[in-house]
Image (spheres, rainbow, N blue to C red):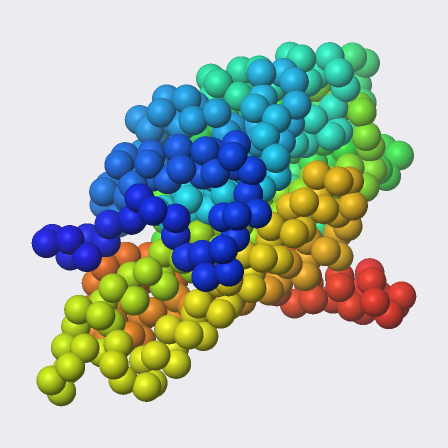
Amino acid sequence: MGETGMTVLTASPAVDFYHLDADLTSEEREVRDRVRLFAQRDLLPIAQEYWDRAEMPLDLLSGLARLGIVGGSIEGYGCPGISSAAYGLALQELCRADSSFGTLVGVQSSLAMNAIYYCGTEEQRQHWLPPMVRLETLGAFGLTEPEAGSDATHLQTTAVRDGNTYILNGHKRWIGNATLCDICIIWARTEDGKINGFVVPRETPGYRAGVITGKLAKRSIWQGTIDLADCRIPAENRLAGMSGFGGTATVLMHARLGVCWEAVGSAIACYEIALAHAREREQFGRPLAGFQLVQQKLVQMLNGISLAQLATLHVSRLRDAGSLTPAMSSMLKMNNSAMAREVALHARDILGGNGILGENQVMRHLCDLEALYTYEGTHDINMLVVGREITGLSAFT
């Protein structure tokens, strides 16, 4: 830790006990290191301050756009077309500094842009994706509803065709960037009963969004409620490339992999903070790191992170090979979110009373991981997705 107590990220590779770095391409290492520098220099020093105020440092968006990671693995349309591992490592480094900021990138790239890419037509991709890459257009992803969280197939929001327009009515909740976005991908049920995505500009009459207050996790990114009251949009704003919940599920499957990298980034931060503290802090005449129980916690933390790194890199390679399945991404998310949560708890324990101080960062990561543990599929639902895959029997409908 520095003289002020603020944790400083190292410029060298983060936790790499199994020499993961050797399995990365030169481009992947370059992307990771570029984002790491941005995160250490520009994001980390202000992260706690903005988290305390529940504000997003939007003035960093221009620097973020120059990093060449927005759009991730999407090819064409001005997107970087980098590997899944390169994009994941970028999210890891952002979340190592501030997971709220990492979530903003995930909402933009993994959810909103991927929805247009996977479910939209070529014309829609050409129209919407280039300005989103440049962050001139911010996106949101409006799937979750007050009565449809894990049960996302039973949406109540409707889209009724009226001539060359659609009229949307319904409610959404827990939508990141709902009040900041320029466009929101609203998922609604059409008259044929199918779920479709619709590109809804935030300024459209009938779109009303409000910030959810009192949030104690991911405080810097604003989650919102959206009320759609006779919200009329052009018919060409329906994402017509892929209809039905299968399109939505495809987007979520790919986005879930990014969340797995986010979990690793937060876990790495907590481990590094705890290790540095254990080496420096003396009790009973010697450093905390010299005590067996502390070493046990540190080893458990490193073990969990290292195994998650290997699994996440491997699944990223599977995604690029076109072999990723929903159950794969679910099991990885289930594993990584639980691992990161446990690592953060161990870190808070090792720091003792200092662990609850904002300046030491751990409590911010711990709180933020409580949100990550739930979004992109709760731990239990992801477990049941895997259970369905291996048994052939669904424990939920």
